[in-house]
Image 1: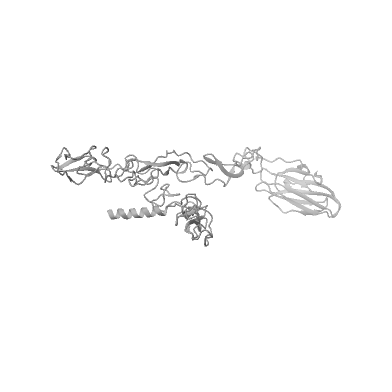
Image 2 (image 1 turned 120 degrees about the vertical axis):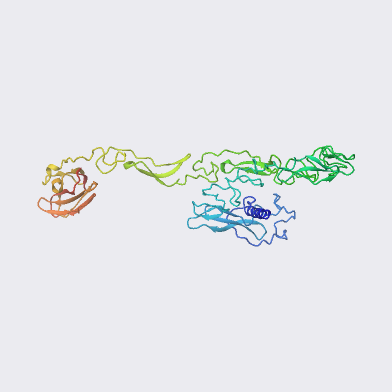
Length: 507
């Protein structure tokens, strides 16, 4: 079991090292690296002419400026993967490694489909994964739903390591209470020490020397022990670097409490990150703090105050609800949309509207419903309200089958309605006098579902020209065959019950 734990520890350490963050910046377009022979006053070519190992005085002893961790992969933009490479001068920078193709995008340094789950460490958590977000996709023991363990890591990704009861060992069966002493026999004693889990274990017995053991302590006449830890001048457990504090003596376990517990001349030396900057939370919930001693002193804790998630806001490019994603749920913004119905329908684009999205198109204004196959009043129904219940003859009907029809001069127009079928619903329109060879041009506009209409041009004595039967507006042109009066004859081939409304224009 110990061998398996050790192997797991090495694996986790390797994964964490691979995921090491770039020191700061260093991410840009790919660069070409050439030789660096160095200037004349820099014989070793390391950009360090004064030999003080800090050429620009900016606390940059290697002269590399902003750098990155060699071997680290990152996303640049939507579809580029860059990798940190060492340059010939011994520094490091990011260069282009791969461009995602086929519509794939870069997520977590991988080329993936836009909506696919990105789970690098196989813990079922990551970007777009059903298991939820993952604050560290290189370590399977760390994700937003993980149980906090006593392992020096922030397993549940709340910015705090080993919090709660994670490191509160069950000491019900401990051997003793830390700090307790007892006589093993009349000539030796032992002391209770805290083990790695914080539970008490007995130390090996120590001979009292010339004195006897009584009431849990060696009664050496020459032992000076002011704090009761069995240590001091002439005492059986050895010297005491601080005989006024029983938590300080040589060989003691160092904890984070501001004291030199093991008497090696350093306080809290095992907690190198003490006082370093740290963060708590993700997205808009991220706050800054510094590493402080956790209660009990077994580990460090980030003192940054937590922030409660908010409702995700559309279009502000922030992770407002702190789930590791930005503007999720508003992927349709910018796509085409429609507003209104019938004749009022208008097209536009989806735009952000606070915590949601809306169509930026404004519906048109409804008009009175007429019999034309269109939903004029925009209520979802066309020709409703009884507007298509019958057909009323227009003023041209009395002149049908005659050449005394209604005169429409050149450049003028007229409207009418054809009722009945074929010639029973015909209209005659008088065009006036034309000279032989002149062009005669008429156009008609109509659009009644299921109808067709026909036009013919005549003189009082002869047929001149005709148009095909059509179900939409069309035109008819002819050259005058003689100098005479001319007429156009209109009649329906298929006429629905409501009739055909039309507009005729004499060009």
